[in-house]
Length: 481
Image (tube, rainbow, N blue to C red):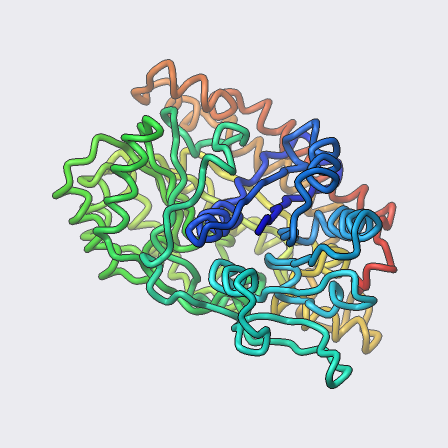
C-alpha cells in the first residue's frame, strides 16, 4: 500500500513564513506504523515538487493521495486533484485540514475527491487504507452511491488519549525545510511538539469555535519521552510547543512542567497560550522547566470589544500577569487585532495604549478584514454572522458586527502602531540592555531592526488588500463570496 501526502502552495506569498505541516507528519508516522509506504511533497518549499509528483504518479503509483488544505491554498488543492485524476482514475483522493473539515461538500462535488476527513486525520486515514467499511470510520465524509447522497461524518477527535499516537515522522516531513516565525527560535536545532490539541475558548473569530473545541492533553511522561527522543535523534536544543492553547488545562500544564523539571532536560522552550489561562504559580513552574518565551493573543485593549467576540480578558489582571512574565525574564510575544466588530477610532487607541503599556518584547498588529472572511472562509462563527448579514442586504452598516472605521484607516493605524511600539525609547533601551547571544541576534534580527518589521507588516497588508481588490476567487471551487 502506497500513500502520497501533499501540502499545496498558498498563492504567491513567497515572503510569508511557511507553516510546518505537523498534521501530515503525524499522519505519515501513523501510516508507517501499520506498514504503509509513505511519501511527502510540499509545494511550498520544494522547487521540484511537480517533477516529484509526476515521478510518483508514473512510477511509484500511490493507492491514496492525501492533500492538506487551508483557505489560502484551496485553488492549487483543486488543481492538483484534477491533475491527479487526469493521470489515473484509480487513485483515491483524500482531503483533510481546516477547510475540508468545514466545507466537505466543496471537495466531494463532481467526485473530485473521494473522501474528506473532518477533524484529526491519523485514525480515520489509517482505518481507510486498511479497508475498514467507510460507514464505520469516524469523521469520514463521502458520496454514498447506495443512497445517492453525501454522507457527512461528525468531526473526529480520536484518539482522545494523544499518547497513543506515534511520534511525528520528521524523516518523511523534514524539519529543516521550514522558516521559523520571528521570536519563535532562540537556538537551533529547534524541535516542534504538541502537548495538547483543541481550545475551550469561545472567540468567534477563531476556527476552534466549531472545529476544534475538545481540548485534550498528552501524558506528561510521553511528552518528556519525545523531548528526550528529539535531543537524541535530532540534537534538539530547544522545543517549540505548537499547541493552540498550551495551558488551557492549568493542572495538566502544571504536571507537565513538574515532569520537565524532574527530567532535568537540557533544552529551552517556547509556547503560546491565553493569558486568562495563566497564573503566577504556573508561570513560576514554566520558568523553572526551561520556558524562555510565551506568545499571547491579547487582541484588544477594550473589554467591550473583547466581550462582543467571546474573549474573556480582564485588562487589569492581564497587565499584572504581563509584568510578572517580565519579572521572570520571559520573552513576551503579543498579538493585537484591529477591525473587530464595533471597532472605532477610540477603541483602536485603547488597544494601542494597552500595547504600549505592556512589557511585550515583540508585537504584531493584525487586521481582521471581515470582507476577506467571505473570500477565504474557514467556518468561524463571526464569518457565519457576517455572511448572513450580507445575504440580508445590510451592506457595511446597520449592524454592530461591522467596524465603524474604514479598512484603509485601519491599515494606516496599524503602521502607526508599529512605529509607536518599535521606535519608542523604552523599547529601544530594552533591546540594548537585554542579555542576548549572537545566535539569538541572527535568528531574530527583525526584532532589533524595527524598520524591517514595518516593511514586513506593510507588504503583508498590501498583499491581502490587493488579493481582495483583484477578486481572485475561483467560483468553480464553490467558495462563498
